[in-house]
Amino acid sequence: MDKKYNLILVEDDASLGYLLSEYLGMKGFVVTWAKNGQEALLKTETNVFDLAILDVMLPDMDGFELSQKIKGINPELPFIFLTARSLKIDVLKGFSLGAVDYLKKPIDEEELVVRINALLARLVTETEEVPQLSHYEIGDYTLNTENFELRYKGEIVKLTGKEFDLLALLAMNQNQLCTHKEILTTIWDKNDYFNKKSLNVFISHLRKHLGRDPRLSIVNVNRRGFMLRVEEK
Image (cartoon, rainbow, N blue to C red):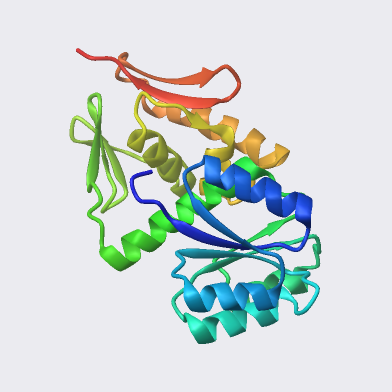
C-alpha cells in the first residue's frame, strides 16, 4: 500500500476495538479508534479521514444516527457499518443512508481488510480517474475489458458475465495468488460454502476456455486460492 489511508473506527467493545485497530494498523492503515458517537464526532471535526467504520450499536447513539451527523461534518466521507444484528431491514437502512458496505459480526479481520482495500481502490478510481488497462494479454488470448470479450487469435470465445469477471481478476494478478476469500468477496460479494462450490465450477469452465494455449493453467494453490499461471515462450 503506497498511501497511508486514515480510518476512524467507532466501536464501544474494548476487546474488538483493540483487536481491529491493531490488525488494521499492521496492514498499513492509520487507525483512530473512538469508543462512542460523541468521541467520533469530535475526532471527525479535527481530523481528515478516508473511511469510517461504524458499529451500529453504540452506548450514546446508534451508528445510523452517527453516520448522518458525520455527513454534516464531512459529506464525502464513506462509511462501513459493523453490526451484530442480521435483520434485513437494518441492512437496507444502512445502505439507504449511504453506507458503502455492511459487515455482520463476528467480524473476519481478513475479509474486512479485503473489503476496505476494494472500496478504497474503487473510490480512488472514481475520484482520481486512475487509468485502467483496456485489455490483458494472456498467452495467445486477449481479454478486452472495454467490450467484455475474450479472443483467441482473433476468434471470440464466449464467456458468461461471471466467467468474464473471474478471468479479469485472475488476469490482473497473473502468476500471483488470488485467495478464495478475495475472489468470493470481489465477484460474489459473499464468502460462503455455496459460493465456493460455484467458484470451483467457474474455474473448470475457464480452464476449458483457455485450453488452446498449453502455456496457460489455473492452479489450485494449497487450497488457499487460485493462480493464473502464464509460462513464458
